[in-house]
Image (cartoon, rainbow, N blue to C red; front, side):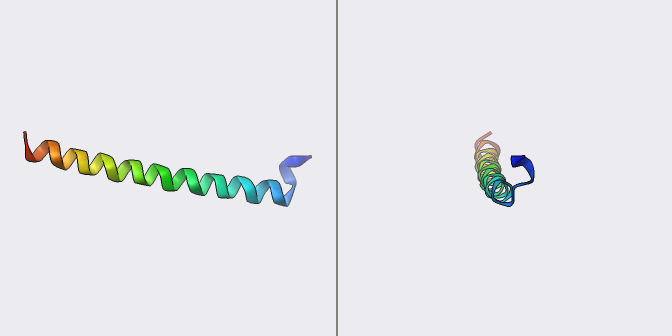
Length: 41
C-alpha cells in the first residue's frame, strides 16, 4: 500500500509545498497587477 509509505508521503509533502509556493507567487503577481490597475484607473 503506497499511501502509507513514508517516502511516498515525503514526496507528496514536498510537491504540496512547491504548489503552495507557486500559489503564493501568483497571489503576489495578482496584487501587483491590482495596484497597477488602481493606479492608472
